[in-house]
Length: 335
Length: 167
Image (cartoon, rainbow over all chains, first blue to last red; front, side):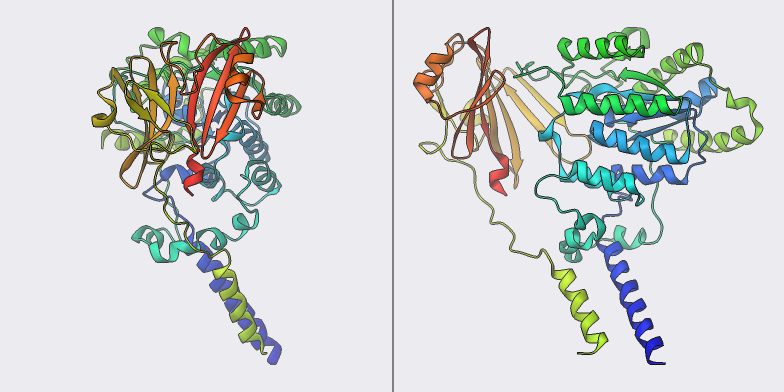
């Protein structure tokens, strides 16, 4: 009987400990909603023909709901704020455990980033709600800044204990249920802040993408090749930070040497119909809903014309699911 | 010691792990502080880490406010005739994050300007620099002078404040 009592005490202690970890962890429910993006994927039906990878340039600019409405394309954006290329790689590795898409579209913006872009804040947004796996462990190890500690990812209370005094309604509201704020990884932003003046284009010490970043791009390429996935490169339209000609030529060269398609949407903004007076929520850095809709319509056509994709509007089962999603999406758009 | 006490102590220890004093808030750098780099221009001293205000530095030719991916707060960039100041916010006040030279009408306080050679830079600042490709970084206190050479001449000069020093 004594051992049963001991077992119950251990169990109770564990439950309290797990509960406390959950309580102090940021919920990303109503505030900092970008923190819920990684986890939103797990609840999805894994039938995406296209997976988009990248940073905020992807989750703000590509709307899978529009891709579906326009051409019946099923797609998901596995993107996060300031998602570095090594993070895209491990997230792709994780994704391929769940499904094998026909195409992976990688936004090349993160090729420019280096060690100085590593940030605990952004790491937490991406990693906190990721399911535990070998890929998560690898991702944490590759992402941690010097000040961070691996065990604080295992036991969030080590990092967030100071939140005990700052707990809010959100912490209790979303204790058991997470709030989802994206539509197949796309985050709606209807604000309009027209493009205005921008900082001077600075001279950089080097324009060459780092070896580490190019190695990760190569790893993404190989991972796609092993799984018979077509890798496509894209550069989302953005006025800032500047996409230097030197960056462009490296991507063009890589695409050429690896026989990859590369779409630089910064060069065709007129064709897309973008208007930086109305189509951006932050002065030209990212598109808002209106700009993202235009870009997604434009890209949907390219994807349909060039790659053998299924029109899932003709699949009763999938269409039923997506019709519901599109309905919810439109409700949110009209709010 | 019984199991209950042991587990209780363990829980409390884990909860308190990492607790430490909150770093004291430090204020920005002041002018006439000789242990940091500063730029003297038109009877004015711009100190990276020092307070910024339009009253102090004048009205800019252009202003940009750029938000980050997810977090609150925006980078502010003030473009003047010959230099550009980027600022950061702390406790409701604005401080100079960096000063970027736009042309060769400005010189550093030590006399470095666009078009100078590597030897001239070393003559003015010495050999205690960090070299990354064609960029040379000199540190002084919590400020850094970043100099980039192109075709063997100085083509970029920037003062930067180390924001991490405030933590």
